Structures are given as structure tokens and as C-alpha cells.
Image (cartoon, rainbow, N blue to C red; front, side, top):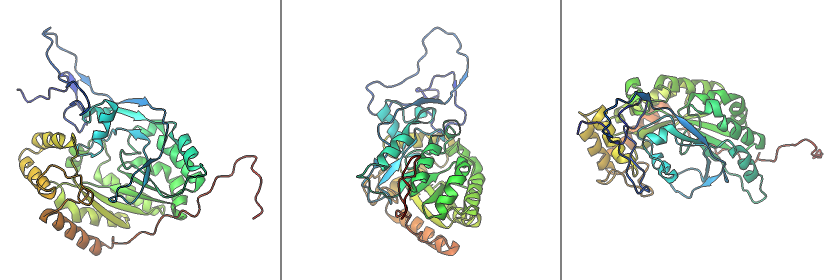
Length: 362
């Protein structure tokens, strides 16, 4: 073995990508392996490009019953995420599409441009009962391709027209583009945003999450949203024990200085294909710390790479998990980030006026 990943063709150049390989998903019968065909002809080097396909969605709202989550419904404008965060817990979802959770997840994306119309139909149904919709729970709605496709913008326009409460999670700067919608909604108690900050180290961020805005730029997003009146929660997520956990307090202090009003944290999760992918990344990018990081990860997940049990999967268990929780609580109290945000309003929800509607006198 020469150390090269056998699931990537040798002429492919990976620039600003998180995954190091493209192993087949768990539902595939065949494994993907690049081999020499014996022709001894040098292939021209090619940059691995992002591809986007369209999907015509049949439904927009996804419901969950997880006790670990503060919401029961979400909308995902895209499948896959160009940000390429190597640790992303959503990578295994690409296997359901017959694609790899590796490089395919960050280069073969699915845009859902009709989802706003489907969403409007669903929230307009007589049986619909309003509750906050979460955006960005699986893949980032403000990933780079949103600049060209505008799917998230269309979803926001529907929710704003219906005065429907929403909560956004993102690392992307494109959220600033939509302040014309978000600021008025926030002023009515209908919107808030969570900005994820994993590390303040620009070099580590570029390696871990290669196509996300750098940490300093994300802090600027917090500053601009806050100045516009949008409540921002900083999400120290994921906390990677042995690699980024020492940055917990500095991240919270920087976010507070930028205007964040609340905070949360989530321990690193490595479901299914993400575990070997993360191990390969550690061995390639931080070989001197790889064994220590994986040992810590297993300590907080009961000796396994990941424990999906409710009540454990988001925080882990044991000494290291308890220490992170205690440090977080103390830092949050010190920075004044322990504010419990009021519930998003559901009482303003109503069908928007349409041309030709009869005027109301009440």
C-alpha cells in the first residue's frame, strides 16, 4: 500500500474537501475501488468539482419524535452539503440516495427548488397545527450553492408571508442576505438563528470544515445579525475531545463579545460511516493526536465510537462529558449567556392576503 485512498481515482485532485475517500454507502452491494487498468497512460489531473441535481419534492416537512431535540419538524432545502465538514453526522443520509457519505456527500448535491411551494401547501392545510420549523438541522441551508439556487430564500419568503415561527442553524454567511426577512420576523418574535463555531483556529477550521466561512467571519455574522435585532445562539458544536474541547471558553467569550445572547454545545457524534472517515482524517491531518482523540471519543460514548441512545448521543457520558458540561455551565454564567430565550410565537400564524380576497372588517 502507498498510502493513497483506493476509492478515489489517482488523477482526481481534492481541493478544499473534508473527506479523504469515497467509500460506497452501507446499502451498496459493490465496493468502489480505483485500479490501474494497465494501459500505462497518464491521466490528466482533474479537480473534483461540485455537481448539483434537482429533486422534485413530494413533501417539505420532516417530523421527528426525538426527546433530544427542541423541535418536532424541519425543512431541508438541500441534500448533501458543500461545506464538507468531515465530522458531519448527516453524512450517512447520502447512502439512502445510493451515494457515498464521503466525497459524494460534499460534491454530489441535491437541490429542491420546488420545496417552498410544497411547504406552503402543507402549512396551509386545514389540519395543520403550527409549531416552530427548524432549518439547517441536517445540511446547511446557507451552503455555497444557495447563492445560485436560492431555495432557502424561497422557503423564508413563504414562512414570512404566513408569519410562521422558525429557527435556523448555519455556518454560512448568506444568512446576512436574508436580513430583510429575518429582522422583521425576529422583531415579532418569529425567528432566531444559531451560528455553529467549532474552533477559533483558522487552520484547524480549514482542515475540519474546508468550505465553511472562517471562525472570524462567523463571529462577524453573529455581530451583524445581532445588530439587526435577530437573537443569536452560539453553538459550540461539535466539541471534539482532545482536539477542540480546550477552546470551549474562548469561543463563548468571543461569541458574547460579538452579540450572542445564548449558547449550547453538542459532543462529537460519529454515526455509521462517519466513524472510520473521522479516524482516517485524524491519522492524516493530526497523526500525533489521533490515538488520544479517538480514546477520548470512546470514553464519552461508553467505549464505542458512538452511542445513538436517546439522552446520551448529544452529550455522551462519563467523566469527560461531565467536565465539559461543568466548564460550559461556568463559562455561560460568567459570560451572561445563560439566558432562556422566550418561545417563538405561534399566535401570529395566518394565511397571507391574496389578490381578490374579501376585506375583513374585524
